[in-house]
Length: 232
Length: 123
Image (cartoon, rainbow over all chains, first blue to last red; front, top):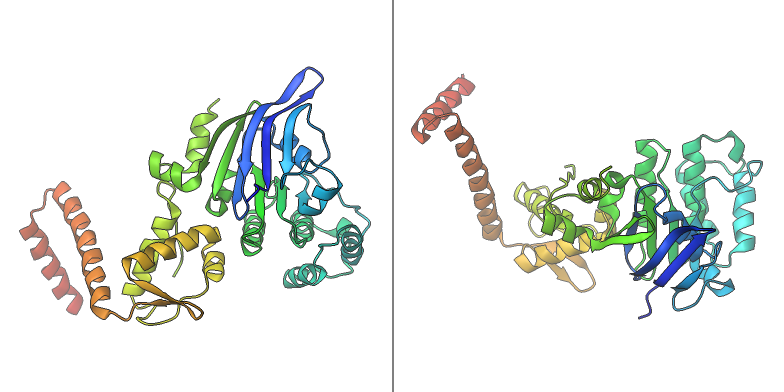
């Protein structure tokens, strides 16, 4: 089966600065993968190329065997690392917005998840707390029946209870046909939901492994290994 | 019962141990049906693939069996459950005795202490 995401000698330069230098990696369907690395290691650049917001300088990135473009946008559901929705919109507006843009948006699913959190359809984004905003964005993104979910820092800046909610939402939306790529540096929190990890360092892949393999072979958590690899 | 995971070992192995504990203690009675993988994964807040792997391991050990459409069940073999209970209890006692040895107590002293405590409790 074609991997859902595949990079071959992927390079991205911003002027002279190389954000990604010759990245090779593969993500298969049915896996929840952590894209881990310190700030500035290339996580967001990688995700933006996959979502079609940036283009590669050299090399290729393929989604289900296709170069990023109109066709892949249907397969990819992307959660940016910062609020990106219009603040004046209420939840009902956002639902219609997603429904207009994405054929595979499952409105009922989103409505049900929002109801469970007691978020009203008339609530405005502007009046919500940071944690609630993040939850709403995640619900919208996870309610698309996509094949690759790209979640850029989905748990940054929210309290531990909201983190648990977000991680449980990711788990309960698991599908064998789809992969989830989660970029974060809050490793201790996401570790238990990950199948595999990719460590990025200075735009290069420093390590790819399954979480079980790290724990079995090194007798340490991914978090502990991360601290060792990226020791300042 | 609460799921609790340590960082230094694979999570699926810890799930196997904790499910064993749940079976031995009767939390999951012999012959009863286990919740679906997806529900168990959500309950333990772990990846469904990890839960699947743990249940496959429990099946391999014979503690759990699956019926094609009906789901997964706990074994009805009570002697097997008793055996596992014994071996888990032995592990605990072993560990306890090691700690007592480190304190300089002989096994005889430990037994004296235990029966003394038992009497006190009865009072």
